[in-house]
Image (spheres, rainbow, N blue to C red):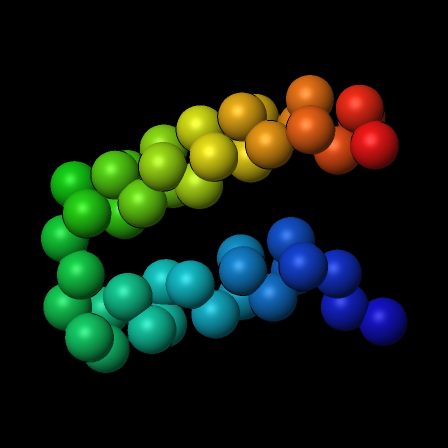
Length: 47
């Protein structure tokens, strides 16, 4: 069974090179996802 971490790790580099995404863009996207995830956590815990 593959976890989300396995999928992201195995395929991230391949597709990033294929569509030519800059490291700065990847960093920005990861920071946004992390921020939104952390902001949503209190709402999940409250319910």
